[in-house]
Image (tube, rainbow, N blue to C red; front, top):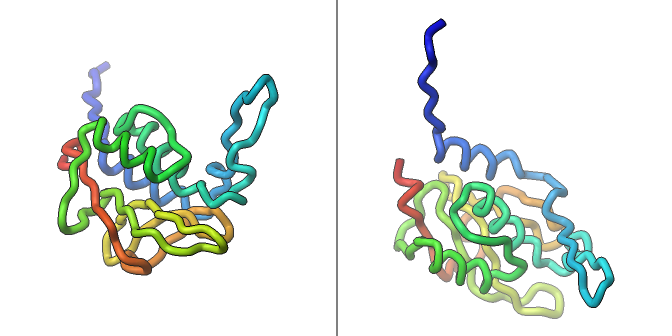
Length: 151
């Protein structure tokens, strides 16, 4: 039998994971042990921190950052530490961070992925589920790229 040569198509797999996340509940919960008590620190998306957990989980699984995060500040810190750099124009697969805006009674930044055709995927502020929306639904603060996505 002939040995097959297999090469992982990294960027294709990464983009498929992002697109296949749409509508998923898998980013609703993150459990921690706090003072000996198990706590869901996201509480089913109720605290609207699911965007950072969504983005960082995809990046962690793809080995593009070092740990999962619950805040956009934490994601941005890890992007810098993990070789990501800012770019001016979005490329498919880049990380987009939108400026602070008031959501309910809090001001929050938001993070997601650019998927092309002026569309992005991030978590919805009410449902907490990843969804597709217009890239410029809110003012963009920064756009991040990693060299491993160049292939």
